Amino acid sequence: MSRVTRADRGRWWAAQTLLDLGRLTARWLEGEIGSQPGYQPGYGPDVETEPLVETLARANRAGFLTQCSQPGYQSGDGPDAGAWAQRAAVTGFLEERRATALAAEARKAGFEVILDPPAARVSRFAHPGESWIPVTTLHGELQTSFGGFWTRRRIRRFYGPLCNRTALRAIAGAAQLTIVDPSYATCTDLWDFLDDWARQQGAKVAELDEKRAEERTTTQLLAVLAAAPEATAYLTWAETGPSGYPVVLYLNTVGVLPCEMTRWQIHEQDLPLLRHVPWAENAYLPAFPADQTPAEAMELLSDQVQARTAPTANRGGTPWNTRS
Image 1 (spheres, rainbow, N blue to C red):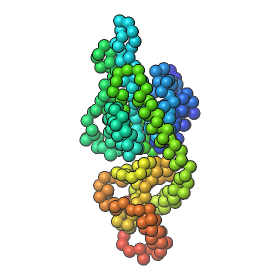
Image 2 (image 1 turned 90 degrees about the horizontal axis):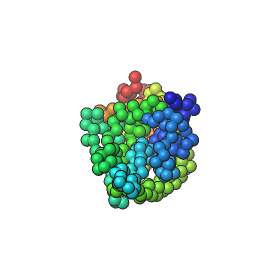
Image 3 (image 1 turned 45 degrees about the vertical axis):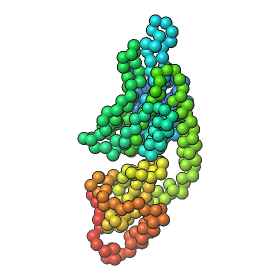
């Protein structure tokens, strides 16, 4: 039986974000990597997936981490004509705002869609009902379906053997999206649609990678300040925000009161810089301040840093510091 090579294991274990995972999945689809999470080590995509590789790889590099897919097909002439039929389908994980936008585009184009919230924001006792779309039949009898909600436990079981905790959080923090062609037939409508989306989004992702140097420097500074013993810092999942910014950092460099915390949106590519910052429990969320503009956040942060350099007696009050 094949095993995951040391090189492949190292590649997957080093991945931190949804984009990292998508890029590795693209390389597996293209045959550059021998194994990927959840699949038999040493094996590449199925033969039926080969015509879809270019589109799937492009979608993964654009941030849509695909978990499973299949082409549309219907058996040909003869006594078994139409006996085996399947619909083109794809399912995976995508940053929530982008997934919502893609789902709307897909529905408008006539595709069937299932859009579930991120597992990280769903209680294990109140997860969405299981929604499935039939995709494969044999002599009219159902064989397989796409969909089903991925709980955090299911994500850990599937991706956990090869992925670190930061990567698992990134997957759990992404929306779950399934898109299915309405017809049981050999057609490329879904893949043409997905390819167009991936080309547009991929260009934006590439541009973002090149132009985020200043923003990344700011996040590096915040990470250093958050690591200070007297600082109070939390990460939470963002309810709203621009595409690519699924996480919010709450920071008070002097650790006094939650109402004095700086709120700063963190791009998913920069999450590894904040791996030492704890994630907030739901009980703390009501105490957090409302949205701040970047200018307001930087002004508040400047005040905090000045207070941090002042004598302890001048800070006033007892530090509200939840670090153990």
